Length: 195
Image 1: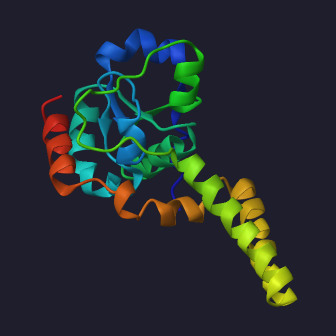
Image 2 (image 1 turned 180 degrees about the vertical axis):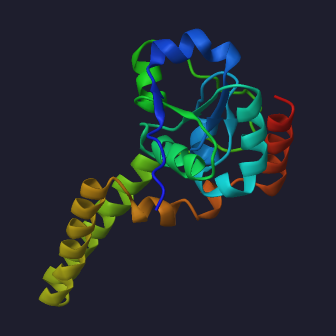
């Protein structure tokens, strides 16, 4: 087993001062990207990275690549995946949340083809909360064994926190409103080839 180096992490001020020289890849869902992203960022959702690997490798050969997401967790995973493929990238510490917290603006195109949607974190919280309530109601009204729905979900959330992974986010990311249109991804990859 080969060891891949830990991704380089850039703070918001480091990224801001170098933004003009970085190729920025936002690995959030298209809806999250449409709600606001770093200026000049290109949207390649995390589950599409392998498809975009040749273009990302080409961009990394010409200059530094910064990978961003909402909080930094998905971008760190993306950097690790890219490092396994021999592509060196950096991640933005704290993601777009830290960017905004430091007082920097996000770019929100006026005529974006994707509806502005909920962040993945918000979608996960809503789904998890709904499932816990459903388990409690079904456990009280139908059969006590159905309380296991809520217990199972609680166990999944603990596992998610301990491993810094989220199976629910992966599943939610496959829903149509979280998927890029093929034409949008093709246009992004074409833009990445020219950077």
